Image 1: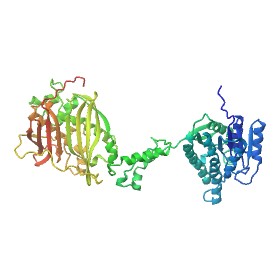
Image 2 (image 1 turned 90 degrees about the horizontal axis):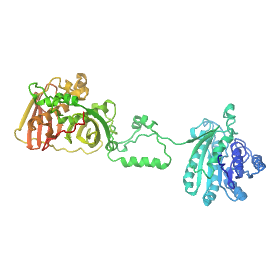
Image 3 (image 1 turned 90 degrees about the vertical axis):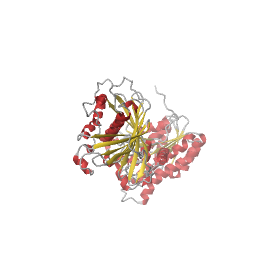
Length: 609
């Protein structure tokens, strides 16, 4: 059998205890052994008149049941007199239930200042006065339990009850602060929002509901919250008709604006759906939860940005995207960058024929897993990194760097980790440099890529413009080697099978919107041609010597044009180069260099598909 929660020798003050909820509370505490101070001014529901009969009647009931109780007829606005009565009768106070209240419903349009003041005076000021008088007693003994009586009208609002709602929600704020101040002193403060049949609800609630709203159903919660075994504090509870629930504050995750670049009503409008989205709601429990959010926001505001680029978010973010490839992908890629065009030349078969005993990946393929992962995000409408909100139509591929960190498997499941390495303000445009590490399923780094994206119209936040000097400048002498190779008219259609679906390379109408007379060849396709030319010229067509490549894309190439790759060997392991289009005599790749390994990497792992 459950142990009964007793209040033997405890002293309890219940205000407004002459009727309804207050009466039920007083009788229940008495049955559990408490000594009662029964307070009731004896006014009507709207606060008119005064009488001692209500309090006297409840005291008589308690004494008839063998309990101890004294009556008090003072207004709660004179709370010190109520507490003094308890001290005179019993010498202490252990529990205070602030229950007294009146009601004066009237629409706000018709509400007078007196009607406003009367409600707040009884509910809010009255609870303050009684609690203020009892507080030193509880602090001195290191123990106390306090109840505030709020209402659904205070929590949710209600027509015709602006005064009542303000007072009732005010009580909750009052209780929250007292709970913080009292906890270390053993004083616990909670708030109830009861729905019960009483003088205040008899003309508000339907008759069929009133029968189920017995005050005793609320009292059970009160007698638990006030017991010495209960350590709940700062809580808000809805209770009535056998239903008990705890309420808490909820807030959306919201949106943090970078105030360094300005913030206006249009910015709020643009983020309104996010600001009001509760799908990933948080539940703050103290004011510190708010301050901590603000503090983190302030700490994170270092770099600035604009409507397209939030550098604070983007710099702190990373995106991990899985991708995979197999031998067929390697062969299709090799064909896409011009390998094996001459069927009588068997030297390129190792890159396109999957059954060749020396089948190998062209090392420039190391750019494809990360490139395809990035395109997959774009296709799904997701930003590459948190804080970036521009579209593909603003982006031009400016520079590319690829570094081989391990022999490329002939097929693998990989992950690609994107980060923002640098951001340069080329007002009105921007250049973002992304780093991407591609890792196999064993955690081995296979490749490292840097992608420099030129983002039109996304500059102007006042950041650094970035380095301005040229790198990888060819020496003033004739090239050590030149390879001239014509691309096919369908080269872009073939290359796009490796994953780059951008309509710019296939759709004439789409290309014309960006000022091109016809679809252009992928920059990374030209990139692959360059890598292949270096391998053929300086590595005896062995891809294992190829370590890295860096290029700057200077001009677009049209399928069918002839690429002329001019190469200068600066050292045993470094080749500087540039690429021109023969037909237009335009430099299309410049400031480019390839690094070579001293010894060729050899792929020996057989666990890959």
